[in-house]
Every structure is written in C-alpha cells, then in structure tokens.
Length: 127
Image (cartoon, rainbow, N blue to C red):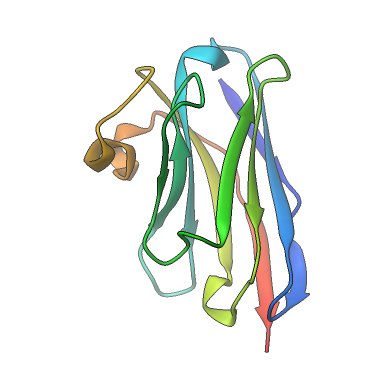
C-alpha cells in the first residue's frame, strides 16, 4: 500500500492543522492506521492510531485531548486534526499502516508494528 500525507505547514502557537493521508493499493479497510512524528535529533514518536472500524482510537500522552484521528474507509483516507498546537509539536508527521484490524494499545503505539509508511509532512509551530 502506498501512503501520501498532506496538510502540513507553519502555524502559530494555538493554531490548528488537519493532516491527511491518502492510501492506494492494499486493503485499506483492514489496516490499523497510525500517525507518528519525528523532530530533529529525536526518536520517532507515536501520535495516534485508529483501528479498522474506527471503534478504537489510541493517543500519545503528549497529544491526548488536542489531536483527533479519524478515517474514511470508502475514501481510503486517514486524517489527524491537530488543535492547540505548541512549538513542541514541530516535527515531520508520518502516516503508517499495519495489517491486523485491531491491536492492543502497546502494539498500536509501536512503530515496528507498521509495515507501510508515507514520506511525511512537515508541521512547524512558531511561538
């Protein structure tokens, strides 16, 4: 499956962005879809994930309550609404896909569980 992210950009503290990821190929509706991010000099960090039917969402502690993940299986897209952005949210955001319908939380947060990755979209939050 190929994943292409869009929607990144530069915003001021407190602003919002909606990131999108379009998938092609594969059986999108069966995948767990996730978002990860990586800031310069830091390790890749789990942001959010969602199971195949959108019945379970997973969030990293640093974004819970500010970010919301959703998916549209008919359109083969997954989106990440990012609100109340902070300079610490500055990073390249990656979309990822993992076969398996639904994961336990620990697995959903593990980058190694995901087989397919997009190229990333830059989010910059200025103070």
